[in-house]
Length: 102
Image 1 (tube, rainbow, N blue to C red):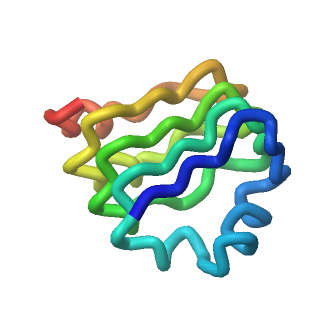
Image 2: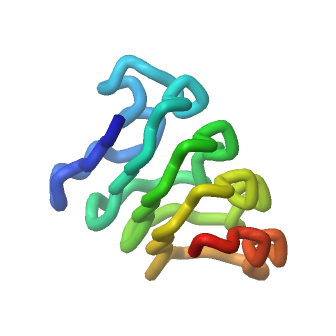
C-alpha cells in the first residue's frame, strides 16, 4: 500500500489526511510508502511506530513541529527517510541509529 499526496494539495493537518483516507495512521500497517512532502502539513509529528512495513517515508518540507518521535526506530525496514527541512526542536533521537537499512 502506498500513499503519496501530490505536492501543493495541502490537506492541512495529518489527521485530515487520515480522515480523507478513511483510516487512522495506526491502521495503515500494510503501508510501505508514505510521501507527504511539500504540502504545508502542520501539527506535531504523527505517531508512525505501528507502520512497521514502511520502507519509504518523506516528511518534509512541511510545517510539523516538536521533536522527532523515538518510535521511528520501530520502522526497521525503513530504507529512505527524507525529513527536512522541518520545524523540529530538540535532538535527533539516538534510537534512529538502529535503522540499519537507511
